[in-house]
Image 1: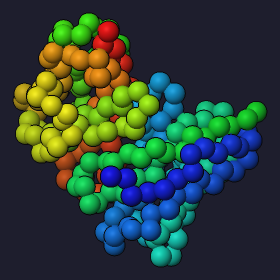
Image 2: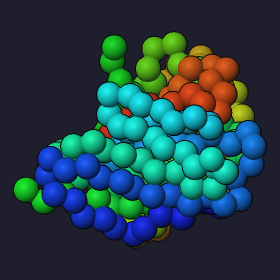
Image 3: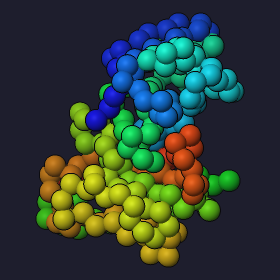
Image 4: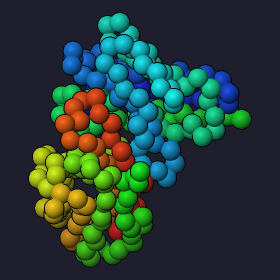
Length: 110
Length: 116
């Protein structure tokens, strides 16, 4: 069901920026791009979402390609607490529910 | 603001027994969702309540699973009788009504269910 493609895993050094890519070539014009993350032993946690324009919040930034076929979640300074599985999810075709894919496992090295 | 609360955090039962999971959404959130992750698989949608009504139950695996949300507040998910393949983590999430596609869901920490 998931219509996004993410790398299985990525590794980052602490205090460095992390760019997590997501491809969604079949995105429709009304689909929102959502990012959630799941820390160990916790439920998924909202990170950020956007439609067309780049978005910033206290957790991260979301850069959306002009054709909207891809996006990148940017963590400006990774910390050990950012180690988690990050999910890129399109929200639209399935109504209000979120459809999770496999996500990207982010490992942060000290 | 209290978050989404799930109880119990862990449950270990034998095959054939009944288990009831509870979810208390954030106060005022009319949308309530159940998800689960079984071992080695992705997080899967089970069903969606709007207030006390089932909006979408397309993800419920079979009739051994019964979800209720009487009064539109907390929700329960009963598994009867439990089978080995029901083992996994069950998550509940909530959001405000008329959330639309841009609204965010708040998840609980989940209930780890082990069926032996």
